Amino acid sequence: MEKIVIIEIKGAGSQNKGAEMMLLTILQELKKTSSEIKFTVTPCIGVCEYGFFSKYGLYPKVWLSFKGFQFGRLGRFIPKKIRTMYGLITNDEIDVVLDASGFAYSDQWGEYPAPFYF
Image (cartoon, rainbow, N blue to C red):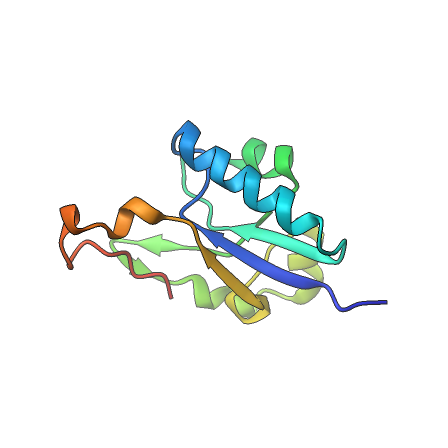
């Protein structure tokens, strides 16, 4: 039995059809390589809600942002049993991060708006 690899996909989701198609392609191609993969994405209110996660078999990453500060690392203090029950993934559990954001890092936006993920 293989170890389950947890892959976080950044920048692809339900923001628009292009982002969703990018996500679907990533899921389709990586599922061909192994059945022992879990995929996670960062939830965003109004953009990536539970219905979106469940439709594609994605696991939500523990992510809490308040007034521009990220408190997601506090998720590691949630007992493993509860995280497993709700399918929550913490930063510490992620093995691979794929960045599919593309346009978010273009010259058009300059160097300052690049998102701070960790």
